[in-house]
Image 1: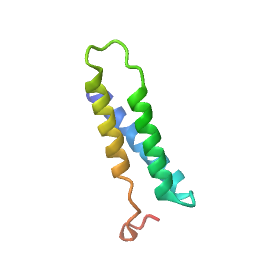
Image 2: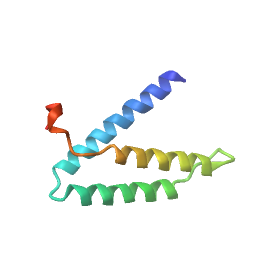
Image 3: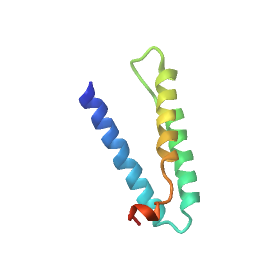
Length: 83
């Protein structure tokens, strides 16, 4: 289970980085992130989750993960030396 959790965290970091990179190349990064977040939330709300009795619990966890990923996207701190 730890290996699966580690892989999921790695995927979340990778996806967050890719989204942030695209947003930084956008003329209006904040609008891009807001629109993209809304699209992802709509997908999570509408996706078909088969084989589970309580799909709402999975959907709630997925929505929380999406919100958490987007909340981490802030402008780089110049003191970190990463720009």
